[in-house]
Image (cartoon, rainbow, N blue to C red; front, side, top):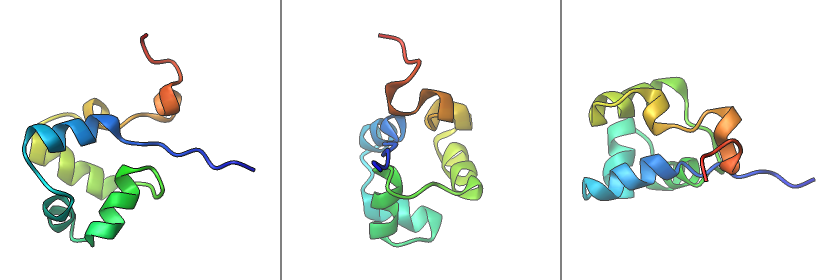
Length: 79
């Protein structure tokens, strides 16, 4: 059985636009850089409180950063 990875592409773009590293993002969430990388790559889920912290940090709504289950892996995305 294949496990689907849900990369958080919008979060990656925000991180890059703000010149942030995985280490800085991890520190913001109080986790290791390795844990953060796994979450960003879709190998582990973001917890609700982590999504809240990041949405406040970037001044955006959670749904503007994180892909909902109906839009994961490109499903239902505009082409």
